[in-house]
Image (cartoon, rainbow, N blue to C red; front, side):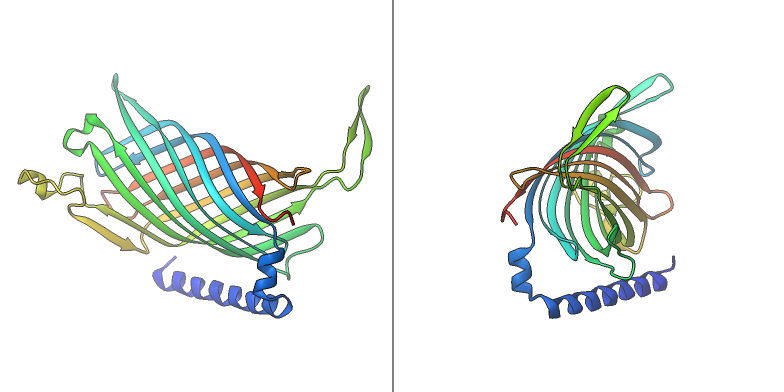
Length: 291
């Protein structure tokens, strides 16, 4: 997608969201919406596999297991939802090549803000479709002693996504008696939701240095951490998705089981950075207004 097409797509998305927001505001004032919509504080923990490679220092793949935690605040109903939060992951990544083993320690932090609105033309009583955007800035800090002068690596990956979310209510409306083979069991009344979300990067950007992590300042014995770093916009690629299964509890709180996938790469010819993660998460959602 060319730069001109990306800007056009972004403008069309913003105009669509503005029209949807104005229609809903005429029905329900912003103050009433804030008061009535369920709000949650989410605490998440997860574990998953991850792979990366940095052509600025080595074309070799590093693979490992990353631990994940996050904290967020969200508001959501059928018409719209918003979420703001921060996440952190860390782990050791290994590479075994030619009988030599290297370890790279990676720590990643992300700050994100999301807003979605119901797309009424595609929604139905069985499926609810929302569209909107997600702003995410991810920072990676890596250490690898095998790279000597390039032991330390750091980059920022800010991305503005276009988002689509499909939700299906799979609640049990009333208690039912079931039988599997000779085993009898009951399905109790319970509120449950299954959702899939896809985020595609519209404005991809990154902040990192040029070829290799040894800048000229190191040669002068006065190293500068951000030596020769550059910020580039409309460069690179990023896409992620999540599959969420949410169960409401009797106390109005909720449990959420999620599988999340994220992949991105920076632009450039010789110094691209690529990373992909697969994470399984468990989230506790604490209802703050009991609505």
